[in-house]
Image (tube, rainbow, N blue to C red; front, side, top):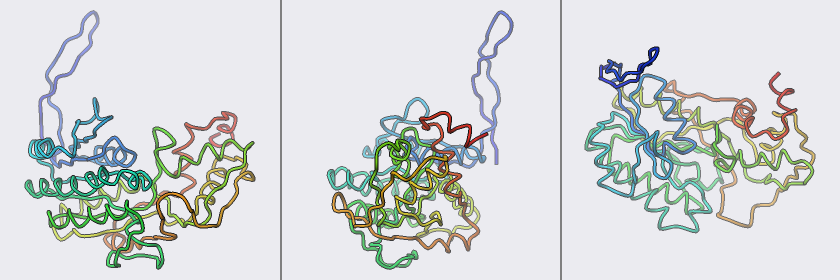
Length: 334
């Protein structure tokens, strides 16, 4: 499972330093992560990298120096990195995932979510790589949950439609593909706006001002670490069993509205929540959202695949660096 390569390293000694060539262990299992600079991509990269995989991540605007700079709309660049690295597995995290942005920039979103995904699937097929395409619960209309993989999709907004088209495109271009549908994500964000869950933290913290919170749409917040673990488990299961492919669902199992998430966040940090106001009406602005697109995850569970972090524990770990009032840290962590 491990090969050997030469690597240059700096060795320090009293009064001098020298450049030496050393043998290093390189895992033989290779995985390529797209969107490795994003919230999910960072977690997926870390999960594989820490579990004996030779892991390469690629990104665009924030890629270098840690990751490879690759424009997924550049078919030559995609061809080059796939054929140079020869991955056994590709996890395709890159996407335009913000529904309201997709509505405003439909052509650009379609290029990334559909056309780039189709091309990546072709390149993966060319090196016989197992492709994991990350999709969404928004392919469903939310009227009759929970949804199995075999249920007929009916997306309400353009984001869901582009991701569904992306699913069809990758499955048509590479039969060795797994589609993994997931719900709203949270995790160790670089900025609060990176997740629809963590972005609520400032409204929770600043209790001197009342805040209206959606109490209509039912969500299942899912930790990116858990999705990353599922991706790795799925990849490793596939290495042993070529029949592992097709569509799969994974999700947290705690049902919450945004109002309930905000209250849980407040509780996790011993913060007041009386200033949070539940709004039970259906949202009238922005892209349409399904009321309850709960995913049935029994297919993966039957394969022995899965990991779930309790929401309060996961959100506390994710948000404590953004805690404004340092006094609360003592009550939470000591």
